[in-house]
Length: 173
Image (cartoon, rainbow, N blue to C red):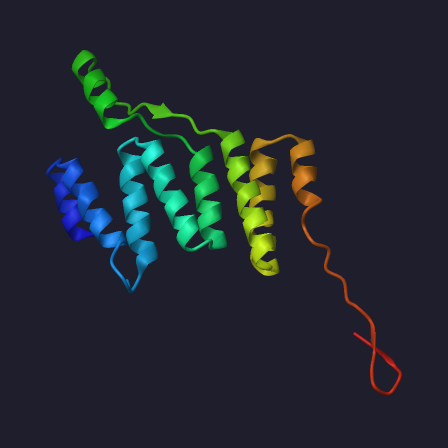
């Protein structure tokens, strides 16, 4: 990560990507999530939404972890800086200090949440699926309509205590 950071500071972005690629393909990594996050953050800072999206796709294929699905969906909805090449062109034309942002895509974020929900359901991961649904519901409360919130709410499992007969014939919980 430090080598990639150095190359990024030297503005050798092709080399930065190559170093990150070397890192994420190493087996086994002690803390692979930190390296993946740094690589994704680099692409986001570069304004490369397609590159970051491709990394998220690789990561969900590798791990399928519920937190990755959530981070991926939130990334899709979040604004990111304009691509570096476009920023440099604009800087030559204008003397503006504010970094321009490209808005996120709420519909695409919903698709990622939906895919994550389906994936976790196929794996039979109830608790993880419930955690994803809670974040998704909060997302819809902020970005969606009441119908969108209700759609997610309807997917949240209802927890109820089941009564079962014990060996001595009495009901227990």
